[in-house]
Image: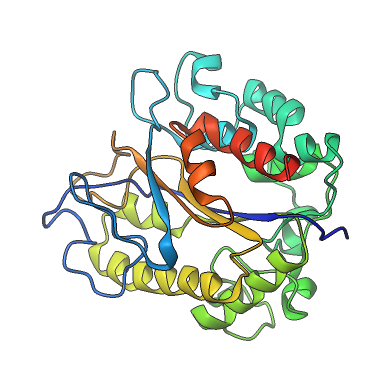
Length: 298
C-alpha cells in the first residue's frame, strides 16, 4: 500500500446535529462528551485544536434531511437531495445508487492514483450469504471501487472495527470475538489510518437511539463514542493525517421527537491543513471535494 503523502480518516456518525441546550438534548450536562458536545450559539471548544464547521444538511431542499440522500451526498460530493428533488430516507434507491457508482469517493481517489483506501468497518459472512435487497450508501460506495470488504477474521486480527466498536452486538449475534473498550477500538482504527491514505468509518447507533428517544441509552453511548474518537486523535499522527468527523442529519441532539431535526451538523477537522480543509466546507456536498483536493494536492 502506498503510504507516502497525507492521509485522511472520515469518521461518519449517523444522526448527530448541532442542538440547543435543554432537557431535550442529552449532551446538556453530560460529562466526558467532548468533542461531540457542540451547542448552537456557543463557541465550539474541542480538544486537539480541532476546527468546527457548522454544515448545512438541508442542501437547499424542503423537508427533513434523511440518511440515504445525506450519506450519498457526503460520499460523492453530489447534492443527492437536489438531484432527486427531495430527501430520501433509509437506503439509497436506484437513482442514488447510480450516483454512488459514478461518483464514490473511493472511485474518485482511484481515478487520481490513490489506491490505498479502505472502509474500516467489519461485515459478517451473513451479509454476503443472505445479501439484503437494500444496501447502505457506504456499501455501495465501496463496491463502486471494487474494494475488499473486511470480515470478522479481519476484526480478530486487528485490521477492522465493527459499527458497534465495543463488539457487543457481534457477540450477541454469536460471533466469537473479544469485547473492546473505546481505547482498544481507537487503537485499532488509528492503526488502520496509519496504513492507508484514506479511511472511512461509519457509526450509526446514534441514529437508532435518537429515533427511540432513549435518553438513558444516549447518555451511555455518547461518552463512549467521544472516548473512542479522543483515543483515535491521541494515536493518529496529526502532523501527517487529517481526521474529519461529520454526520448526515440531526437526530440524537433532540430527543423530544422521533424525527430527524432541521439542525446543521458539525464537521470537525483535526490535524494536517485543518483550517484549509474547513474553509472548503459549507454543506455536506463539500466534504468529498475537500478530501479529494487535500489528498491529491499534496
